[in-house]
Image (tube, rainbow, N blue to C red; front, side, top):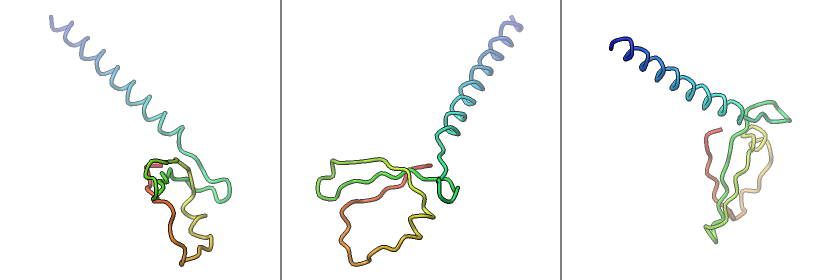
Length: 85
């Protein structure tokens, strides 16, 4: 009886380790690097302010976008929400 219980716990533990390893590898494969500077890019959701229905997901580099010169007097056309890389 004890050997069945130990083997069931071992099988369950191996199954959980496999699930966590698979999800970690999937996460590692979705990370993208910037072709210009080599830093990790971040996923961003842009939502249109007028419609609130149009959404698009883009990966962009925070370092490269902060280097660009932006006009400060422009009225924003979309809302920017960042996701995990």
